[in-house]
Amino acid sequence: MAKIKLDADPTFSCDVGIPVPGNGTQLVKFTFKHRTRTEVNAWGQEVKDADDLAAVKGCVVGWELDDAFTDENIVKLCDNYAGAGFAIITAYFEELRGARAKN
Image 1 (cartoon, one colour):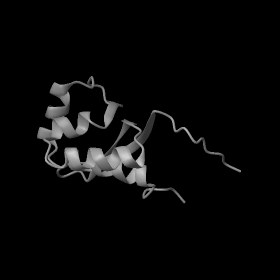
Image 2: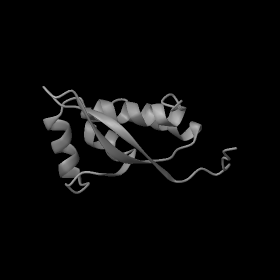
Image 3: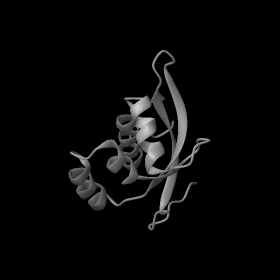
């Protein structure tokens, strides 16, 4: 039987489908900050009007891309793939809520 810990790990990773024009979605593994329900609700209010850089930096601590996880590269990702910011934030909220639970 699987066990859980009452104190969750500080980070978790999951694959995010980044929309690539003309090529569907490409999976990229991101490492996210864990937040409690209370923390994520408060952060969700803060980030709803934020730009992509602030939103992504607010929840992501790293990615599995050849390029370094820097402000400049976050902006570049979101500029080159217009749906990337939304996909990343959506995946983050879904993972925290358990909406993407694997069966």
